Amino acid sequence: MSGQGSKKLINAVERCVDDMLEGYVAVNPGVRLLHGHRIVVRADVEDYAKSGKVAVLSGGGSGHEPAQTGYVGRGYLTACVAGSVFASPPPQEILPAIRAVAKRNKGGCLLSVSNYTGDRLNFGLAYEKARQEGIKIAMIVVGEDCAVTTNDRTAGRRGLVGYIITNKIAGALAEIGRSLEDIVEITTAAIKQMGTIGLSWSACSAPGSGPTFSLGEDEMELGLGVHGEAGVKRMKMTSAKEAVKIMIDHIINPDNPTHLKVTKGDRVAVFVNNLGATTDMEMNIVVREAILYLEHIGALVERCYCHNFLTSMEMAGVSIMLLLLNDTLTQCLDAPTDSPHWPRPLLPCGVSDRKTPPRLVLDYVEETPTTTLVGGAVVEPDYADKLFDIVAHVSEKLIQNEARLNQLDTEGGDGDTGSTLARGARAILKQLGNKDNPGLPVDKPWSLAQALASTAENQMGGASGALHSLLLTSASSCLENAVTATAWCDALTHGIDTIRRYGGAEPGDRTMLDPLCAARDVLLTRLQETAPIQAFTEAVQAAEKMAEATATMKAYAGRASYVNPDRLTQPDPGATGVAIWLRAILDKL
Image (cartoon, rainbow, N blue to C red; front, side):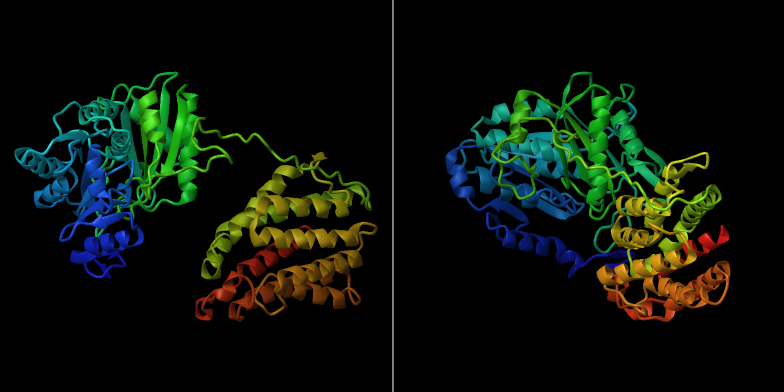
């Protein structure tokens, strides 16, 4: 179903929360839905109530999954109440949840509320009614957002990731039998030791609605809320490193009235939260940068977490929360829980708990043996200079065509052929150095081919890197003892045969083999009939023609073979890349 620019795979807007909750409890037998309500409770709620341990109850609008449903479980929430998407649940939903967890529980109930006006009002009303019924209950309001930058009267600091972490602390304390009064005291103090800031580069949308706000292609929003509320600053897209610095600097800026004071030597836990659509790659880069920057300013990072704690539908962005640690809070974070969505790090074999801070450096690094290439035919200085120019020109041409090749690759691949080839080309240029002191053995074509093969293998990556490395590695064997036009042709033939053997493609399959084979076929014939430079000119022309012809070929190899043929209307990017570097060689001959 879609509506107003928002695509969601749901049945109906008015039923989406109910359908979601029913699906969730179906795959998590440890929780149940309270009949007739949007209330998720532990399956053993009756036994838990008899234990006299404090029940921890929370809730809020849906659309922030896994919050709050995903945190119901031993050592965390006893129950949660789900509202409609981005809307606080009403008191008639909250009060039955309080009764379910606390009416027969002598330990009482902690009601944990995020500092949004709707949540405060609805949970506050249910809290007052529960007190009138004689239920032992206390309420805390969590607000740790650092976005507010003025002392003007506002609705107060919003509850963001700190809301989720406060509930974990409360649940851990409840599980070990701490009193309601103790839990209120410890969690209230912990909230004052938290600070969060969010950053987004795309909006979210509720089912049936369009985006909650708009951002330009090159824009990011700092300090926004989890419903898409505007932030404190709109800025240009930047690197992860710079973005993390901006976020942490904002959290700890003493000129910000909502800042968190972090001083050198403070023990810190850092939480990097996915707002919904951020990739794992981006998330792990952000957590790395956060650790590095916090250590740079002198903080002691003792715990780090990278997870979907509190999302905002499909919003692309992250929030960073810092928590100043003490022994009690650290123990609460480390305390076991069977909640499905609390992150559990992979610990070393035989280690059952997390005692050491996160590390970015491995204890063991495999030593890669280096191979010194020696021997092989040596060419004259003029020939070596020409090879130097060819290698440089080929590299420059591949870099210049990066965007073009990426665009061609969007039809049948993952849009990175140009970047892959350009990455290898940049590495080669860096190694090449200058003519007076070349960093590559341009005077020994055999060694040069092997060096280029190594760079393709180690720097390019992907299928393109492997194929070019195979081509160059196999070709090099024909250049060890002689460097003639025939030897170069034999090298190309040998390289093609190796690619066919390992790559599985054949001429006509719409791959880089097509221009390579076209060039090789012309060379085999024309080298016997004309000058080498003329033969190579005709070979390059044949390769370029064949590369263009791949636009009408059916793909039988590579990623493009899985794509609907109707979508393949442009030349193959790998074949085009070959035509580019062959033409670049000819330019310098």
